[in-house]
Image (cartoon, rainbow, N blue to C red; front, side, top):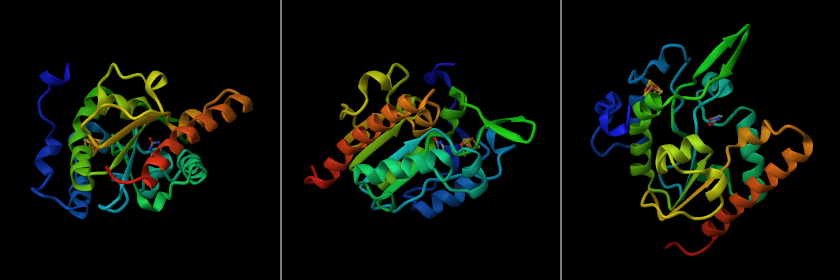
Length: 216
Ligand code: URA
Ligand code: SF4
């Protein structure tokens, strides 16, 4: 169903006026606006200070994040941490979140395999991200991978074509899309992985330079 024909997400009713991050986090813990809350362990809300200058947005929590209740703490998170450090961005000073706040998975034996959220789920969860953006108002917004980029910039956005450069968007003074750290982990061989990692660090270095420069 096209976005304009969809009913507003029930998540919106849970968001208080002029919220603080703590209030948003508590409200999101009880969200049932799509079916993903049923099988996941908990809502994984964003993490970081309201005063953060940079916000990083991923797709949705993975297995480790679902258990820990914190974003980007599993293998993709370690890849992100390494690349941020190499690019010169302090993760402690960033607000880190996801487009969808519950883990979506398929069981295979004992494993829980990540499944991509569908358009309905992205739509249902969107008010939470919108509220995080409104509270944090980051100077630089970094979209990690196609799900985040398309949720915020439209479904025709192609990360492969428009990555690593500041985009024309009113979401934040500076908006940049890059690959998702998981895509580096999925690279078919060592050479491809090294190349993908270097590209990711180069994109984050553009962000680091902007953060070092004067506010605009
Ligand atoms: N992948 C994401 O997009 N987000 C996380 O928090 C973890 C893995
Ligand atoms: Fe609510 Fe988002 Fe969880 Fe769906 S994924 S139940 S919209 S918090």
